[in-house]
Image 1 (cartoon, rainbow, N blue to C red):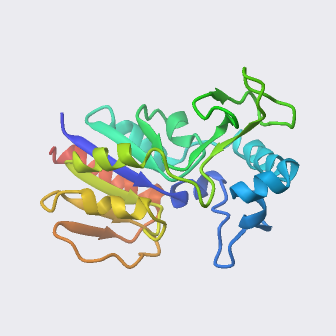
Image 2: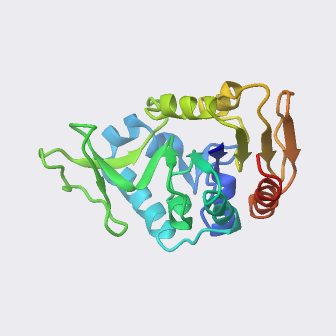
Image 3: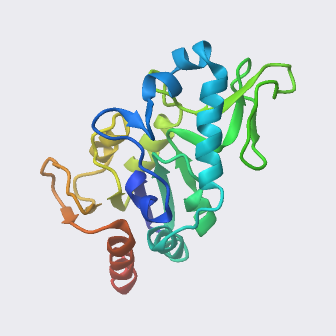
Length: 230
């Protein structure tokens, strides 16, 4: 079965009400990233970091997948589809995608500060000081913070290298290492970039640019792939 690999970013979730939260000033919903999204922030003020992610989790709890997420889930009925996402929300899973690689962690999971292999689902939206793993260590958001390694990157590179089609949607291709995944895709493979504000993309063989929102561009591309099978 042909393999479609998708790299998704914040733009695909925007129409579902999930804020892209990062602007040119480096502010996330009014917070300086250094205060809420770095290991140093965690050691300085755990309560503030937990509160920030609790607010994000609470707002994301009732978010619904949009036409872009649903189009990828539909594609999975006909092809092998791997979604590599920079997003920490669970909208791809809610839509029905079954193979999702979260590069930057998962908002609805927590991780032990003493044993990173201990990862737990968060019921509801709140993670508090005093919530501990089975070994007695405080739980933290299962998020890859600035300055931390991206542990799923090797898996993402491997998936990109086996793509028969590569789709980039909702990301500016400016955030590394995720932005470099397109360079692991073979030159003969078709590569589609869907974005309403097309980022500067280095010219490559078999590169197709679609200047549309994820909610319109993805359904069109999925229809194209289904009408003209690989």
